Image 1: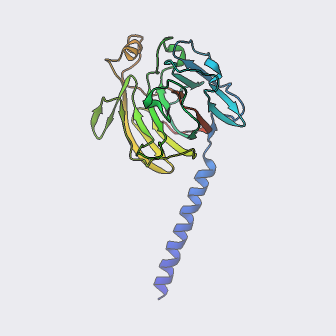
Image 2 (image 1 turned 60 degrees about the vertical axis):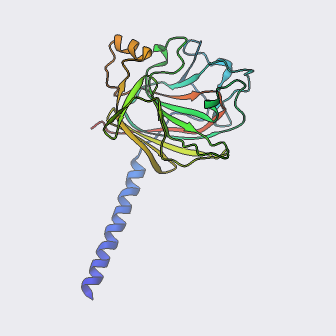
Length: 264
């Protein structure tokens, strides 16, 4: 009987100590708010047909502490895809965004862009894009909202100008769906993206891991990637900029924060 009591106490102590360590780890995590809730001073917009730094029709804006992708000033969409780049590149980190889709898609927005946005990872810089370039060479953690009826996963992967490896296979198709559930309506969704250089990237939606891949590399057959390669970029993509998309559907972000991770 005494041995059982001692064993039970030992298990209880170990459980409490484990919880203490987890609490200490959470306290030690130093998340960096990339979006400060006030302005976009640390961000650079880039729209198709415009040079870096032009916030076309004031699409990216901050209102009431929310970073908005707004189409209030637009009459029609004519391929002016936008991206908002944070000021510096990263290689090993955990990124957390909280987003939702709101309102109606701008007139003439492409059908596939309905409730469609994304977070671009390991991206080229906005200054290195051509004026007419639609998307930066990068890996996209795609954000999708449901239409109220059909299954439409979020946390998918798209790869403008890049390839990646999943389950030991080189993936060359543009987009691959995740295992997430569909999020209809205007509810806020939390996505975390764990990036370990070129080795591993993992998408986590509302606490559920939905996609994992790695070995990010430039696509030698893509014209935009070819330009980077000809300028000395390595085939393996180890780091890059983070950007938020504007693809024709209004989107709101109330949190964009980053936790640096060790490189080894």
